[in-house]
Image (tube, rainbow, N blue to C red; front, side, top):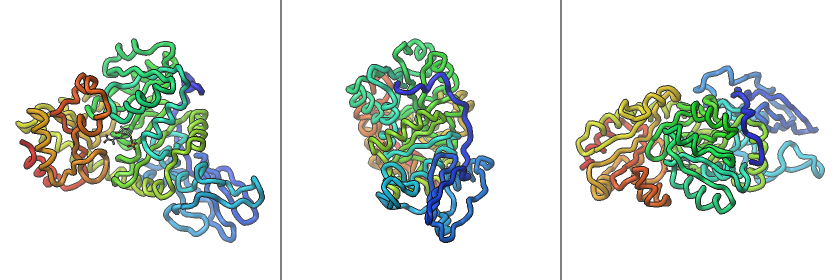
Length: 434
Ligand code: P1T
C-alpha cells in the first residue's frame, strides 16, 4: 500500500465547519475551513464568518447545515452552484483559493464537508460515481497487494475488482465475512485491505464491523466499508473502527434518483491527501450541479431514512407472511441470521429487502412485469420504490457459479422500499405476487 492506513488508525473525531484559516487579497477573501474546504468572498461588503460549530448539533441539524454557510458575497442561504471550470488569478500562480474545478470547486467542497460531518470523519472526498470512489480506494494500493472482500457484493464492485483491478496487479479473495475464522484465515502477509458492504447487496448479510476491524488491525490490515445501503443515518462505520467509508451517493444519500455520485470519508490525513491527489489526477469528479443536488438531497436524509425504514419493516413483515414467498431477508426481521449484530451496530434496518419467491424465473418475471407503483429498474435508495431481479440485472456481471453458490438465484427479487403510502405499496405487491 502506498500509504500506511494501519495500525495507526486515528480515533474518530468530529468536524467543524467554522472557518479557521483565512487568507485575503485586495478584493477577494478565501476562507479555508477546518474541514479543509475553501470558500471565497468578494470583499466589497462581506458577511462575518458564522460562529457555529455544527459538531455540537444532532445529525438531523448537521444534515441541513454541515459544510455549508450562507454565501459570503450575497448572503444567499443556499450554497450556490459554482458552475465554472476555472477561476481568475491576479498574477500567475496568485489565485484566490481556487484555480481549476477538477482540483477544487466550492459547491463540491460544501458537499465533502457535509458528508465528512455526517459520517463523523475528518475528510470527505467526492467522486463522479460510487464505482469511481471504489476505484480510487483501490488506487491507494500497489501492484502485488491483496484485498480480502466480502463475497456477496454489488455486481459492479465485483466487476471493478476482477475485471479492472486484477489486471493492474491487485489480488482479490472473496469470503463470507459472517464466518470470522474463515476471514482470519484469508488474511495473509500481502493483504492490505478488507473490503466489505454491510448490509450486502443483494443478500443483506450483516457483518460485525467492530470485530472485523479488530481482526484486520491486529494483522496490520486496513478496512473499507461500503455504507451505501444504510447511509450514515443508520450506521457510522468509522465509529465502529473502519478506516475508510465509501458511498454510492447515487442511492439514499441523494435519494431522488437524479444523480450518479460517490464519496470516500476517512479520518486518516494521509489517505485523504492521497485521495485528493487522485481526485485531481484521475479527474473522476462530480460536476457542480450534481454536487449541489446531492447536498440538497442530504437535507432530507433523516426524514427519508426514517420513512424508508418504517415502510420497509411493514413490507418485510407482509412478505414474510405471504404464501408465495419462500424466504425474506431484511435486517429488521428477527428471522434475519445476523439480527443481533444489526441491532448492535446500526440504528435502523434501511429500506432494502430481498426475498425468494416460490418457483423461479417465471414467477419472478410475472411479478416484475405486474407491479405498478414499484418501478422495474436497477438502483435503490430513491424516494420511489424500485424492484429488480439481481441475477439478470444488477449482478449479471458476476460469474454464474458464484451467483449460484451465494444464493442469487432466479427466484430472488430485490426491492428498494420508497416513502410512498404504505397501503399503496403493500397493495401493489399483493396484487403482483403469484
Ligand atoms: O452506481 P454507482 O454510483 O457507481 O455505485 C456503485 C455501487 C457501489 N456500492 C453499492 C453497494 C452499490 O449498490 C452500487 C450500485 N448499485 C446499484 C446500481 C444497484 O442497483 O445495486
